[in-house]
Length: 246
Image 1 (tube, rainbow, N blue to C red):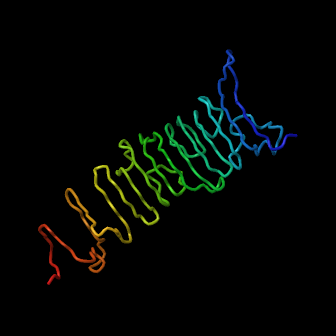
Image 2 (image 1 turned 90 degrees about the vertical axis):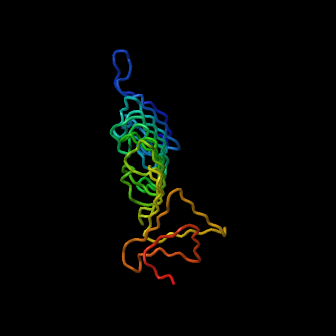
Image 3 (image 1 turned 180 degrees about the horizontal axis):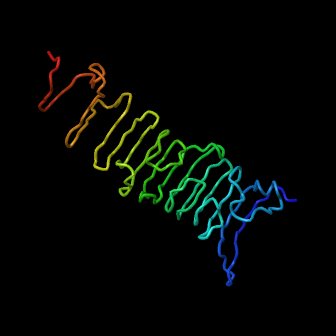
């Protein structure tokens, strides 16, 4: 009986009168060894591309235009390794056990085991016309881009993706702290803590074409404060409400 088998295999289903497969033409290659083939050397249950499972297997699977798979859409290509990390390309929409956004979706994910998936690099599929949006996320979430809410993420958004109003974002969801460049050109910085700008250069120059707005959260008279340390120089005119200046 064979032990620790490697495998390269085509899967074809029933054929029509011209001997052309009605379904099938799926292809896979198992590297190192197939866990299912090691457990059952007859491989009698390996009748479609789904049989070699994800746990502890390293494989490449190419799903055809008429795949026999029950867990993946047509025309998917996926590389999967022993620890659970993966690189997956989708060219069509369809039922999928793994998270998919249909045509154009590319997802690179890392894991320490199949049940411990970690971060991902995600190229959004054509769901809601959002193909072109890219996010790098230090957490594993299998939800649409606009619904993610855990960990830290950096993203750029395609102009036709209307699921969000920003074009670029760097966010830490756990503290609701972010920097955003909006699609209308605004730049928004939000944090529940404080913003510190430091420079080793003695001259820090901030210039705006229109205006810069500094606004403290409206909590009470003590905490509603924008605090500038050091000397202030105003070269232009200055308009303000009541103050305690001598």
